[in-house]
Image (cartoon, rainbow, N blue to C red; front, top):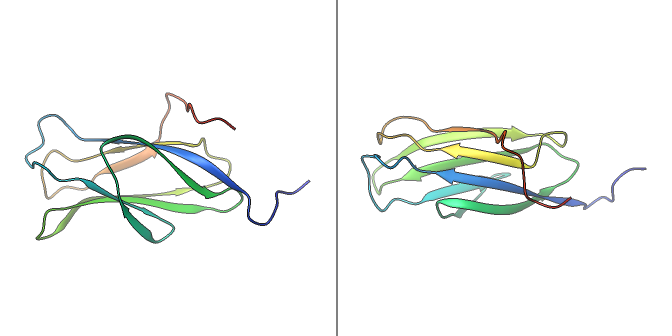
Length: 107
């Protein structure tokens, strides 16, 4: 049985900033399927299509340039938990990957 045409699922994304980062008061921007939205450091959930591959990206912006950019193509078979690790220096890329600690998002 296939999912309805507009079926969605929730994903969990943990945005982690190192304690020794050489930038202050910068918040991440999350991009889901090409649509950017401001986010906060820590744990959050977002709704994405259940049966499509969705590109999830995160970047930081300091009024002069973007940095810490990372993207992940989240496929329907991936676990619904991702983790973004921001760089310590404001000119390095970030990292985003499936969170191996599991998810607390219900079905």
